[in-house]
Amino acid sequence: MRRIILFITVSVIFIACGVTKISKTINTYEESEKNREEKSPQSVPVPIITAVSNTGLNQKKGTTEISIEPSKFHAKEVVNLDINDGKALYLDNEKPGYEIWESVKTYEYEPVSDNPKRAMFVMSITNRSEMPLLLKNYGFILKMGNETWTKTDGFKKAWTDDMILTGETKEIPIDGITKDNIKDGTVYTFFLNGFPTKFNKAGDVTERQNFTWVFKCNIKNEDKERRKVYTYEPRLIPSKQCEKCTGKGHLSELVTCPNCKGSGTSLLLKSVACSKCDGKGKVYATCDNCSGKGILYFPQSGGKHRGVKSSVTLNGWKIKVVTKPAGANIKLIDPQTGEYNVLKGTTPGSIEWLCKSGGTCPIIIESMGKKVKVLPFDAKGKESGAINVDFTKDVPVVKGGKVVE
Ligand SMILES: [Zn+2]
Ligand SMILES: [Zn+2]
Image (cartoon, rainbow, N blue to C red; front, side, top):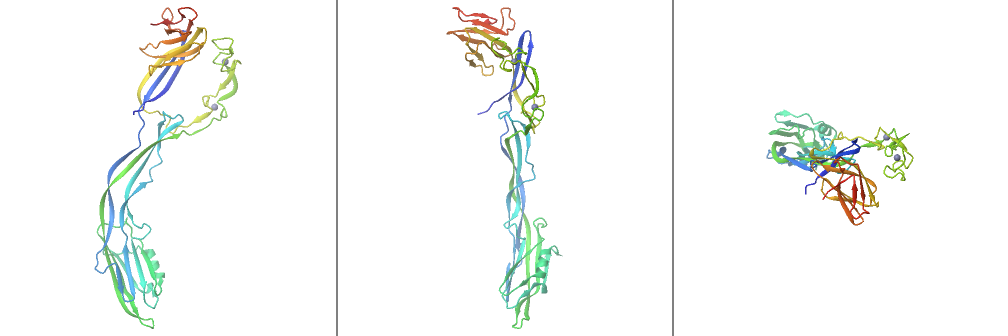
């Protein structure tokens, strides 16, 4: 179901020709965005490393067993955290005090190693001889393509420092090779030159052999979908207490009550005290810094509203309704829905009469089982700010209103 968002943006009051005119604009705003996802194709370069020599990954020669295991990669979806937390778009029409934020996250695929902490190649040496293997005594060459690869500081250090005791297996990561510096078709050659494979009982090397591994690295592009996820959520508008009025909304200076113009009494009944100033005739001045709210708001959206889909302006004026006897019901039409709202036993009292241009919007006043349907115009057709109905007569007598029907 489509939701219609109504919001009253303008409410103007001015006095003309003896009646207090009022005007309200009711806007219907565009619907809010829904959370959504945009998909686009993504080609993910996944490295695939294969052994091309016929010697096998694991090579066992004499008392020495050495293997080199390459990493396996797969395309994995990861969130791109570089995108910021979002931006405030506009004020929330449904939740006052909130604004709608949009956040965007991109989920992209990346080539990821099955064991991301592991080096791309790991050499593993097992010593089955009775003598310790002191690695720095033996040669090692790594070639990338036809060039000697030198960016293996961690490997070089391990090769210089490590000693493998009898029965021990040592893993030495071959660092410096990453998925970012390999190219499609790169060939890696690992060569151990004259590595001991047998000792005599005196501990002398009696046999040395060469160990060779050749790996080819290919980049295979996998077709995936990149997702851009848009999320919309209401967040509280940042606010702080007004410093000028310390959150009270009013200042300490007293001004004439705008409701009773200082008289202290209700404008309709002089015997009733003014509800705004409680009969004092003076009220505290409204704080101009916060417009009486006591709180200052800092909308991150700049206080923007959503785009207006349609707009209706209602015009009318304030009307005092007095009845005999008092306590009549007033039915006022809601110009938006066309339905009547009942104000029970409100006379004497003041109503805000509003109507769409071209509409009629009669007021129904009911008492003593009788009712009148009137428009706020006097006998001369002029706008009337006061309607008086006497229900004590057989036929109600209306003053200041034009009876319809
Ligand atoms: Zn007052
Ligand atoms: Zn203030």
